[in-house]
Amino acid sequence: MQLISKAKIWAKSLKRDIVALWLAARDARVPWYAKAVAGAVAAYALSPIDLIPDFVPVLGYLDDLVIVPLGILLATWLVPPDLMSELREEAARRIERPSGRSGVIFILVVWLACIIFLALAVRKLV
Image: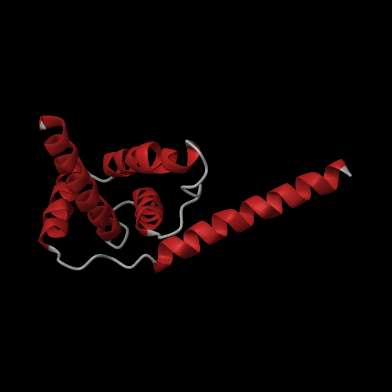
């Protein structure tokens, strides 16, 4: 039972940090490189579309269990600690969830870039 309660606390902190990163991507006090990473991580985490669909065995859930938490860890590390604390507090107070539209666009752009890259690679081989 204790493992389940720890998992719930961890999941709540991830949700809070995703909203905090969404706020960080829009905050003028955050360095540009941290904004870029925070925006990409928040957009991907909030997107209803996964880079690797969940129906793909093992890899489908890999992004949810590994990629998203590692992205959150990297982005929170890049944002200055005092500012990240402030953004976490603001995220905890927010009731509304940010829109996932930018996440959908981000994932579609990544897929499009992959398709173009593969098409160019196949074209060079032929």
